[in-house]
Image 1 (cartoon, rainbow, N blue to C red):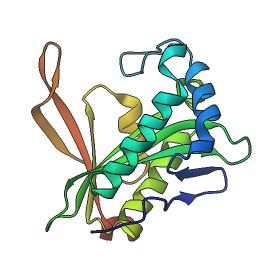
Image 2 (tube, helix red, strand yellow):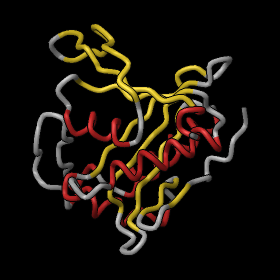
Image 3 (spheres, one colour):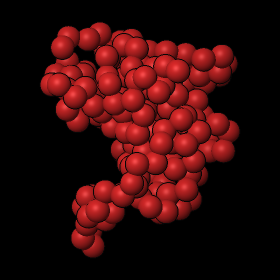
Image 4 (cartoon, rainbow, N blue to C red):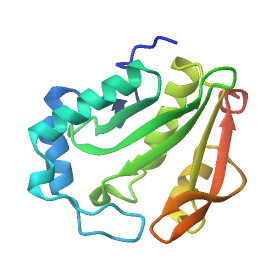
Length: 189
């Protein structure tokens, strides 16, 4: 299936769209302005050496290749008023043939937490998936005690479907994930 990766959506407050070369500075500033790691689910604040133009260009190239192969669609989340990059969302295509199924990922830079960005961005990403990428099913899977991510999944209308046992590898073994899902018909109604 050939799709135009450049398709994004926006609300009154944010835009969800692919990163472009012109986004380098706001992307870099967002990463360097992160607070120290807030909890076990948070990403570590990167060093200056990790947020270079070369790394950004490498990310753009990787994102474009994966989108062209219909494997993953990775989008920046931008505050429309300030232009700031507040985070990122993704749709990782799990199965395209027959099932049209993807996994939704969302991460907001921790300096923007608790402002509703994750919920708003995730909702827009569902629109991209169902209305533009012709997906039938989108799910989100997270650690059992990740209350913030679970709250976002519930807020955007995903239903808790159960536990995926010993599904995700980590340094100490395999961990269980709780799975939330939504199908196109539920989202559209």
